[in-house]
Length: 176
Image (spheres, rainbow, N blue to C red):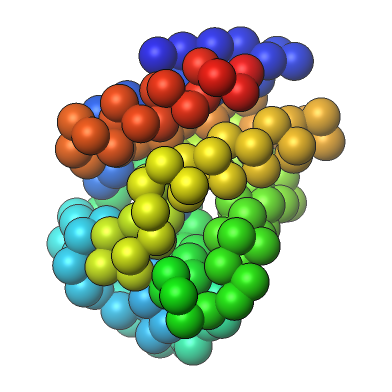
């Protein structure tokens, strides 16, 4: 799925976040210590190599909603923006903290002259955020931020499985 809003291309694809060669920055659904783990963090760290973990040590710990930026190391991307999403039912206000992840990532992208960014479904894995609700927050937040973007021209959601892809497509179609 692809739409153009105010000169910014928004895409929803199914794929591997660590294999987005045409994107300047990928977003890592990070943990507090910015360490390799399962899911998105594991995929990004494996593809980036040990240099990413080393660079992350100086930036950790981070708080829910916070975003920090590192180099992409062995990834095909120049940058990785690490966001700590909320643990559903634990970190409150969960919706506000999840929205902050997307806002803060896009703010960092603007600050670093990043023209394209790829997001996973933050907090929907082991952090337990309901997929439909998380997708609505992600898309609504991006739509709110778009009018203020000058550098970012492409925003891509990269969803690992078919269910997440279908939910994000449906939500994006209903909100755009």
